[in-house]
Structures are given as C-alpha cells and as structure tokens.
Image (cartoon, rainbow, N blue to C red):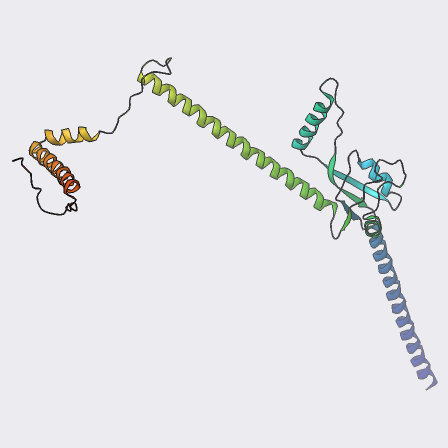
Length: 275
C-alpha cells in the first residue's frame, strides 16, 4: 500500500511540474511578443505634411529645425510649376531693367517630412502648428508660421505613387496639347493650300485682287422677263400689269372722293375710261 501511495504522489508531482513549465513557457512567449510589439511600435515611421513653405526655405532648413524634436528621415519638397518659374524670372528681369543678371531662387509649394517614430511626428504636428518658424529675431522665417498636419496611415510609398501619378497626368496633358496644336497647324496649312488652288483656278495666282466669279440671285425684273418669255407668259404679264394699275387707280379715287378704299378681295378690277 505504501508503495502505491508513493507512486501516486510522484505522478502528481510530475503533473504539477509539467503545468508549471507550461505556464512559464507561455509567460515567456507573451513577454517576447510584448517586447516585439513594443519594438515594432517604436520603429513605425510617421509623415508630416507642410502646407506652407516660405521663399528661400530649403529641405536643409526644415531638417535642422525639426531634428531638435526627433530623428528626421526623408524630406521631399514639391517645386513650383514651370509657368510660375518663368513668370518670376521675367518679373525679376524687368525689375532690374535687363542691365544685369537677375537673381532668382527656386521656391517650393508644399513638402513632406518623415519622422522615424510616428509618435514624435504626431507630437511635432500638434505642438508646432501655427507657431513661428524662426525662433531668433534675425531669422528670415520669423514671421512665417508652421502649417503642419500629421498624415494618419500614410507611408512614403503612397507619396511616391502620388507623385508618379501626377507626372503621368502631366505628360498626358502635354501630349493632348501637342496633338491639338498639330491639328490646328494642319488645318491652317490645308486652308492655305485650298486658297492657293482657288486662286490658280481663277487665273493668275500672283494677283490676290483678281476677279472672283460668283452667282447672284436674279432680280424681280429678271424673273418677270423669264416668265414672260415662256409660252403664254406675255398674257399673264399683261394681266398682272392691268391688275396693278387697277389697284393704283382705286386707291387714287378713294383718296380724291374720300371713300373707303375697296378691298382687294373683290372681283375683277374695273377699268375706268375717260369720257
């Protein structure tokens, strides 16, 4: 009996030891997962958007100013369009009068700054928004304010895709404008060739003031003459002239005797003969 009890106790002890080992292994695994998760959270980068970039503000400036709050990774500034740059260069040249070479600096419209830790990016965007860029009195950016916004769930690959899409749209627009200009040029050249052929067919192509042949609509007299030339047309023309004369006579008599003019819907005109 004593041997059986001892065996049972040993089996229970072994079971308890196995449970303890399992619990320790689970705890170690949870700790390792928590450590890995915390490490992953620490290395997740964050991107801050710059909505306003003052003139002569460069990526080196923003890196120097924002690196005091955390580790700064990649920085990208969107340059101005070609049309705006040409306008500024022309304005600078006109201001100097063309006597000397004008100084023109390339400016930017917007920018993106990547922080190694997204928590730092959130803190920077929340604390520096609408605050002066330059802390010193002699800083050229003292009167410019930060315009920062943290982009949630935005990665640098999204920015690369966005910029590539904008470049593709710009190329397609340029190709469409070139094709439209080519169509207009071809139409103009075809019109010029058509005009040259027309002048050559009319006579001398070197005389732009040459005679132009065109057809004019026949006048009322010509139409009456054509009708009179047809068979039976003279009688109809004589009858039409008699009717016109009768109408004029009736109107004249009405004006003389003060009688109302007879309507034209009456019967055949009466020819008044002088007695």
